[in-house]
Every structure is written in structure tokens, then in C-alpha cells.
Image (cartoon, rainbow, N blue to C red; front, side, top):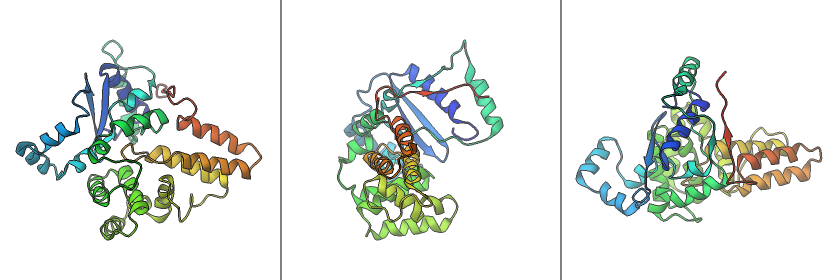
Length: 299
């Protein structure tokens, strides 16, 4: 669970699990609960036709229907970190063992604080390359670099909004705005979510959606709302890239690069150069196979 915990504790769990299983994927269930799936062999984990056949079995289909999942794309949209994306980005730090049971201590401290952690999206270039290759949603739907079919985006938006997967929903709606701006049903779904208020007001508002559309290579109506200069524009785009990265429908990382390049041309103070270096580190552009996340013990 991601509630009443923190990022160091979540990464401790991910490191420990990955130290046992050679191949790992992470799936979303609902709200703040995720599933870790470990495989000794990836032989069947990426066999989408085998998965499709099993999904169509009457007993499985009945079980998924009870969980509210009506289609294979809806099921596969729950995959947050595709197989081996964790292995592409080593998480450096201690692991929990019987002789060194630190999870009990870390989790208790995080529980006392009572916050909710966001699952690392692993947007580095190395991890993204694996995600594009191993995403079950992409493999089953035959997705490439072209427009995402409207039917698929609608199914993903419905499922992600139903289970409060706000990151995926915001991404899918932004991609829909770029690829199918005239879709009545996607526009209607967005209006329904906006009418509920709360977090959806921000996530699906014009400012947030415009920035996400730009990260997909589209033309933003407004770039980084509230930004007062080019450095702020580039920083906000970088932050959104890291937070909202979705392996099944990945952003165009060149958008961030170009934002920092524009910043460097407009600012000779060195602020943009430092910001660009940090952004490249976050996105794993300089040494994609070596990016590490170092986690220290909670204070």
C-alpha cells in the first residue's frame, strides 16, 4: 500500500523484492494499493496471446467482471511498471532481510507521519526503452509511435478514472486531447470528472492538460501556467515528466530537452545550464544504464 508510508519505504520494498526475483512488474489495483509480480522466468509473462486466451475463459471472465473489468485493455492498463523496468534502473540501498529487518522500523516511522507516497515512475531513458518493449498494453494493442486509437484511450480513461489512478487518467486524457480532440465521448468523460471536483479539477484542468499535451509532442495552449521565465517553464515540464510518466503511452523526452535549450538561449546567467544538467540526470539522458536512486534511512 502507498498510504501511510513514504518514498524511502516504498523503494526499500522494491529493492528487496527485486533482489529475490529476476523479473518484476508492478500493477495498480485501486486508489493507493499496488501489486508486485515476481517471475523466475519471463517466458509466459510477455505472452500476450496466452494472456488473451486465458482472459476469455468463462471462469476468468466472470471473476474479472466481479472486479468491474470488462475488457483486456482495461485489465492491462493496471500495469504501471512493465516487466524489467525496475532492473533497468537499479535502486541502490539496503534491503530487508531476516537478519536485518529494517522494513518494520522504516514502515512504523512512515506510518506515524501518515502521508501517502507516490510510486516511482522510473522515467529514465533506459527504463523507458524497456517499458516500450515490454508493456503488455502496447504489445497486445500493437501500439507504435503514431496516434493511439480512440477506442483504446476511452477504455483506459474509463478504467483509470474508475479506480482513481490519477496519473494514468491525466495522461490518457491529455493524449486523447492530442490525438482525438473532436471525440465527443472523451470530452464528455472529462466533463463528468471535472464536475466531481477535488483533484480532478486540477488534473484535468486546462493548465495541467495543456502541459501534458505538450509532453506528448502536441501544441500547448498554455505552457507551464504561472511560469515567469523560461527556466520555470522548463522546470515545470521536467517535474511533470517525472511525476506523470506512463510506460504504456510514454512522453516525448525531447520536449524537455528543447525547453531547456530555449532557456539556455534566453538566459546567460547559468541557471538554465544547471537546470538542464539536473533534468538530464532525472531523465537518465547522460548515463541511462547507470542511473541510481540512493535512499537514506528516515530521520
